[in-house]
Amino acid sequence: MAAAAPHANKPRRIGVNSTILKCPMISSDELKKQAALAALEQVEDGMKLGLGSGSTANHFIRGLGALVRDGLSVVGVPSSERTATLARAEGIPLATLEELPHLDLTIDGADELDSRLRLIKGGGGALLREKIVAAASSRMIVIADGSKLVDTLGAFPLPVEVNHFGIGATTAAIADAATRLAMPATLTRRLAADGSPFVTDGGHAIIDASFGLIRDPEALSLALAAIPGVVEHGLFIGLASAAVIARPEGISWLVA
Image (cartoon, rainbow, N blue to C red; front, top):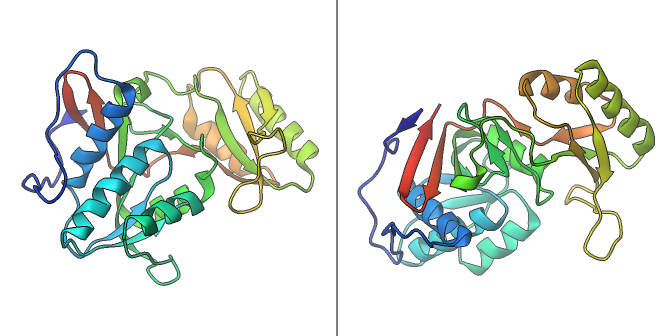
C-alpha cells in the first residue's frame, strides 16, 4: 500500500540537496537519485547500516558520504566489493557482519518489486551478500524508480547463484523445478564483459533464469532453495519493510 515515509526524520540540510524535482522529462538516473535522497532521511546518527549494491544504491552511498563528511556518525556494512570501494572513497566507516551481526537499516535497490514488496535482485551479481546483509537488518528500505514496480515479477530474469562444481546438474535441476511448477525456463549462464564466465564476490557462477511471469514467488523460492548446488537466488521475500518509489510526479512510499 502507498503510505507516508515511515519514521521520517525532518529533512536534512547537511551537504545533500533533498529537494524532489517534478519534471516530466526527468531521467531514470535522476529518479534513482531522488529515491536515494528520500531514503537518506531515514538515517539517524549512530546507526549501523547495510549498504546495498548497484547504481541506485551508489546514489545513496554518495549522499551518505556527504552527510558523514558533515558530521553524521554511522557505520556501514557493504554488500559487495564494489560497494566497499565506493564507501571507502566517500569516507564512510565500514565494518563486517562478524563485527556487527545486527544492523539497524539496509538501503538497497531492486531489479523488480511488486506491491507486496517481493523483490528480484542480483542483476549486478551481489545477491548472496545482499540477502545476508538484508536478513541481518531490523529494516530494509528499497529504493527504485517507478519502472521497477511491477504487477507480477518475472520480466527481469531471476539470477540464481550456483556452485561451479556440478553446474550442469544444477542447471538441469532448476529446469526440472520449473517444470514441476508449470513454468517455462530459459536458463543462461552469465558472462562477464570480456566473454568469460561471470564470477561473484563469493567465487560462484550465476544462472540467469527466465521463468516468465512468476505468479507464486514463494513456491519458486522454496523449490530453488532445495536444489543442491544452488547457493542463493534473487527472490527476496519477507525482507523489505518499505520501498521508496521515485516517479516524475514525485516520491511515494510502499510499506509492508
